[in-house]
Length: 257
Image (cartoon, rainbow, N blue to C red; front, side, top):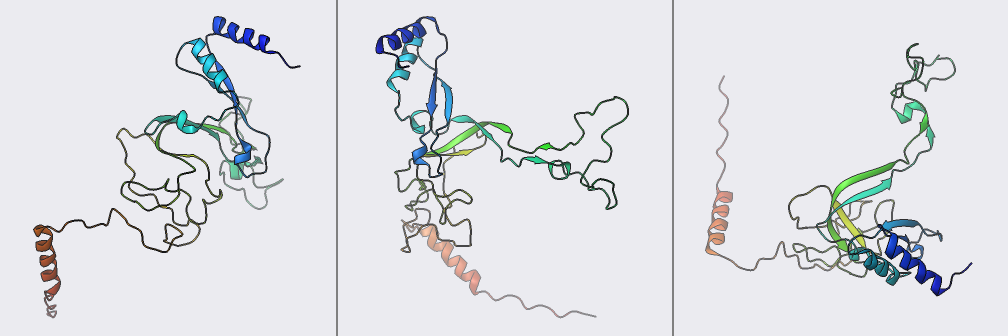
């Protein structure tokens, strides 16, 4: 059943008048991710800042519009990361808790726990290793600093002030067990109080031992190795290094018996 415009307007006015918290339902854009899934993920996000009326108006203006990551976060902000670990299903105590395997002649299996507790208290304690679900657990890491918010359209989103090489964030051969990053991305690190300036981003292949950082074979300018000026101190230092290289080592004295 579809509602007309008057009903929607009346409901929005009631939200502005009676509600204290405004949340929106957002969904992912599955067409941008080449994983074969069409059904989008839904997430409920709370709108902060401004009055209730301003929150409702902002949410209505952004209906079915793209909200990029740069519109929400900024560089050098601290954020919390929420995700789930890689699931392994139902597993036994040997792999789940790392308990020692029983001897070979053990009755009814050896990948078990021999004793699961005393007679009293007459229940199995929580601290006893048991077989159950392994991983696929909810995890939250707090205070992760945003080092960089990269744009997918930028061809030099992996360049820094010390490394001017034109290269993307994806290493040669793609990220291991992921692929190529074509959309916007966030680079994170742990708690840092100071302002961190990235000097170099390694985009060499993570599968082999190739040291190339980009697909082009031509040498590119690297600001970290450019020599712009020669001073007298540098000439003196170079002369001293040559003198040290030209000196002969003192011959080793024969051992005395």
